[in-house]
Length: 221
Image (tube, rainbow, N blue to C red):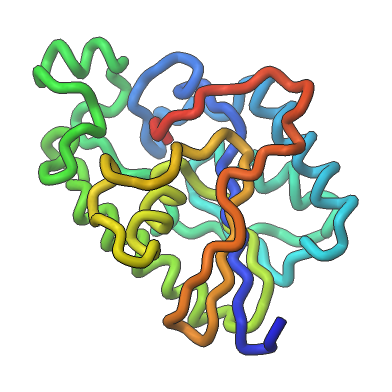
């Protein structure tokens, strides 16, 4: 691979308490990883450690506890301290943070994440604002770490946005994605030539989860 090509490896966090409990979580209501989420992250750690080609130069992570804990588990053999970045967070919910999906639907009359135009609730991000943040964040990662292999431990929504917005000819709305939502601790990989040509090498690779009970494959964070 050319020295000008950045290898960005996007990793979704392990199953979180909010995934299992079905609530809209934020920075303060994350709930961290479940026991299953820890097991998923440990399985990924073993897979990554056994493949020298996946060794990163840099490890970056969202500031949300479920992502931070996942990053700590998988990077432990490397001796690298993951750098935390708030712009890699999941889409913010606003005043609906902490509500279950049923509570949200009853209050707002619509299932969460189905409206891309408006914030999830007052104080939250619209889908377009979230998408713009994710694109800027991933552009920043490539600019700052050009030509390197970078692990980015983040969230289902972040990975979905990179797929839909970087996919040639794709829609700007998640509802029209030509791919499924990534599984917890799945691996998706981009090769970025320079800072503008994005090529997807893999999406939602979850081979390390064989034999481990699956978590929620959704975009609840």
